[in-house]
Length: 200
Image (tube, rainbow, N blue to C red; front, side):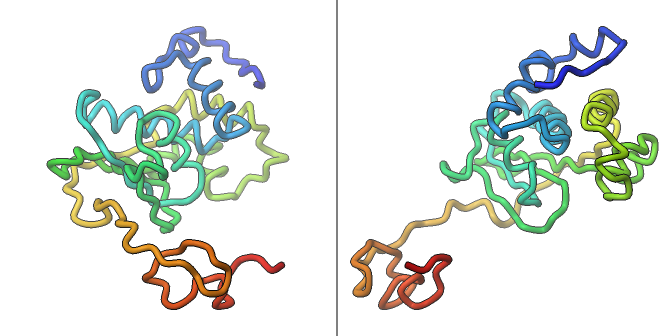
């Protein structure tokens, strides 16, 4: 992992999601392959949401983008796509909601562009107005770590949809390929009906 050159030693005493900063960054790198700025920012979002909801509350999560934020949830909470406790909405908004799965009350945390104006490198990265060549990763990461929650906003919410686990439903055997598939797709699986993502 690339070392951050931060003169303020207090930064390295920082705890995020119950982990020291270096462990937090290592966990991101091991899960995602590299220390992506979106995951670091997402980690601060998860950290704040966890504080607000309460660490002992059994929570589910909803994220509003397919980019980076789902990984932050999966690294720093028990919510994953596979166990059904994480729902991903393809709205391309950098926001997440962590909520009590029984009461359906929780907190939505989002990247706030107005607040980010005080951190032009973060705003320029997010809005893609500064090229990667002009904004080295370590410089951007240092600014995100310095900003922490100050580029975020939050609000208490009640979740009204997208909270139910998807039911698998009935299983059928496809007459085309012989594989098991959801019977709700019709007489054949999607691939055999010509809607697959691959060809032999």
